[in-house]
Amino acid sequence: MVTTYYPPYHFGGDAVFVQSLARALVQRGHSVEVVHCEDAYRLQRREVPAESAVDDGVTVHRLRSRLGPLSPMITQQLGGPGLKRAALERILGRKFDVVNFHNLSLVGGLGALEMSRAAVTLYTVHEHWLLCPTHIFWKNNRKACDSAECFTCCLRSGKPPQLWRYGNLRERALEHVDMLLAPSAFTARRHVEGGIRRPVRVLPTYSPLCPEQSSVGAVPEQGRFLYSGRLTPSKGVAELARSFAKSPRFALDVAGGGELLDGLRSEYRGCEWIRILGPVRHEEMGPLYASATALVLPSRAPEVFPLTVLEALAHGTPVIVSDAGGSREAVEKSGAGFVYRNEEELEQALAALAEGRGVHEQMSRKARVAYETYYCEERYVREYLAIVDEIAAQKGSRLGEQ
Image (cartoon, rainbow, N blue to C red; front, side, top):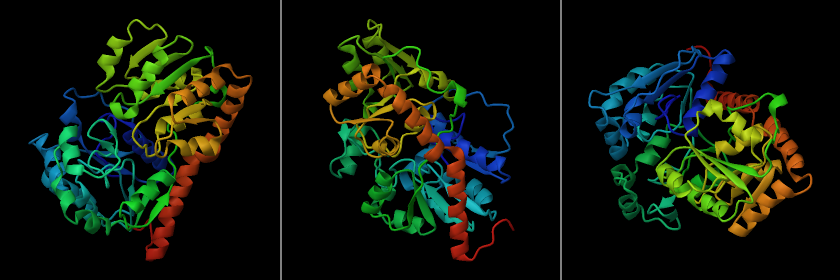
């Protein structure tokens, strides 16, 4: 596994998912190594997180350069390994059965794809980085992208324009990838429409956070809703809080960190029914999911396939999502929630789950069934390994003999 961030040096759900997948494969007898860029984390955070002393069987290579932040900055600009080249070549030069690339933006860029000597090379799409310099189709740091104006968008978003995007590096590098794995049909379609010519397979991710059946579906306080995720403009959390602030009819918990945290705490200090909790450790999120009437995801930019939705379903918690990219797919497949397009539809969904007779109980049951059927670890790993075997067979490769 090659990825920019990996716990505890991480910010979002993609790193949590990579760790969960690595551990799941180890538990099934596979040997797994993870490569990530510690310098990329230090670009945004100076404090060093505490590392877990638990031996989970995963070998982790935490890459650091003597020049620190300069290394990921070079990769961001040039799209290649830069100062991490020697370290990546030393690791990837060994002939693994499978190399699975994840978020590559600051840990080798697309140039790292050419280093794989594996029988099977995969690329899991966690963001829209292959298509968008901001990763999330968030234009000028203020609205969902409606047309490609990438150079000026980068400047207005505070991101240096990436030189490698003005050549054919993407096409050349992706030739070394056997298949892209997309968590949602929306994301797969968007990449094909964006000019990606390699095979793309839809493989929905799963929830690494899973409670015991006995703790599912408890709702001690009806009418209290939950937002979980990054507190950034593209997530729509500021607009969500403003909607709840109009009336104490429904309560809102906001869990997460990000640039809007201090402003939200200040603005809603006087609203007792809105609690800005700040960052919550991933393993401590279970009680918040289990006790919420529903998770609300008000994204303004198109989501790939939000992990928080799957975590809510795992806890038997219904979900309410804005109509943004791949967010709606798990809701429609499970029948365990609502998709809304405006504030009026949001209000209707909140009322249905908080006050509708039997609606919450019915959707809670559907949520758990959907998790166990479509979004659990066992289902994902089984399909993931089947794809590996399929590609190896097509290429005439024999796995497990390296």
